[in-house]
Length: 579
Image (cartoon, rainbow, N blue to C red; front, top):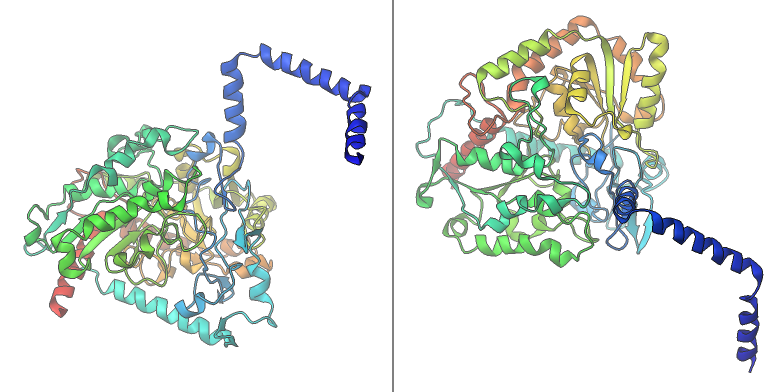
């Protein structure tokens, strides 16, 4: 009876005039919306949705930016890390890195996970701990001397010793990778044949064919024109295209198909190339709420297919290579729902994996350059560009193309932007190009900024590496780095061991604690030092940092692709000699 009387009282409340007025307002609003053309209303709703951050896949935040920003390669960084993968971040010279031994890595708390940040500064996705969304708090953990930073079997370890050992391990891997560098630049193809697997189209071509549906709010197909180089940029000259940062897999595939050492008899081959577009496979699921089984399906099918091939069985995949156009963490999902677990599958341990960002504990992960907008066809294209940038008038001392990370407590970007903007009293020595407001939508605007700048700030983004690093180098702009993993521990085949030849390093902890003003520090570097570094970048590094087009005819220079193929051949040759 009590419940009945309560329901009666509630029913009486509904007859009060205030709710009726609200109801009338709703009716008026409905009538107004009804008069709006359906197509216009639909487009407006799509705009609101695509311009906001979208949360999908359970507890994992996936960042969706508006269609105006996806074309901005500085607003959408090179890769997305997996929130639940325990990546250690102790410090070397007070710089945050992914340095730690594998044993230590497994014992760190989940809060020491890689955090994802959009370059447009819209949101900082959280890590997941016990099913709850939490912000990563590695800054406090690392800097509190009283806290146990590195744990192994429940015992506190001496931080300096552990970091030294971790650093030594990474450097040993880099020495191994450098030992594969081919000294014979004009080596012939005899005994060095490369076999390209004819994979079923679902592993590559069909993924490209899904370009219209790859990202919900835009057509990706324009980036796959001209053999994935994208549409030409006439304003910048011959060989310039609007290349998307995730196009490396089809670009590399086209080059291998036309490599002079390609052979068609698998029994005569020394190197086996697996043209799986794993990065595109990940990208097509980024913004769709699907299960992990769906995300992993194609990777598992690839393994099943490879295990049926005789060359794979012969050496357990050790003479096989796969190119992946996203960062290593995207392929190493252990928990959560971000990315796939392609590189966590046991059978994928032996092949060489070429990635735009390597995982520091995998000796068979090798970092190779991000694709830039420049794809020369001939030596003349390279020399013409070298002359243009070496003679370019650099009216700015420093520039930074990027965006703040307001939700990332440990990010130094806001500090750098403030220092840059406050340089006006020093004659506008620094220029900040805000990618969050569409300033980087056109590639030529970024390249032209870098061409008129002496130094380009390159703080870490979603992960340590940045495509912008390579854009600055091919523009003759000296990169200023704040984390060794942005370049020094990534690209042993394309960047020299002596990092002072081409870059300036500033400890990001010094910036974080405001112990250094980067602009003022760079003002103290002499013109001679700047010119020497620029000449080295332009004449020694630049040709080897770009990927020529599929019909490139280079005789004087080796581009990034040629360097990679020569070193892979050298590796399998040395592997045969030690077998």
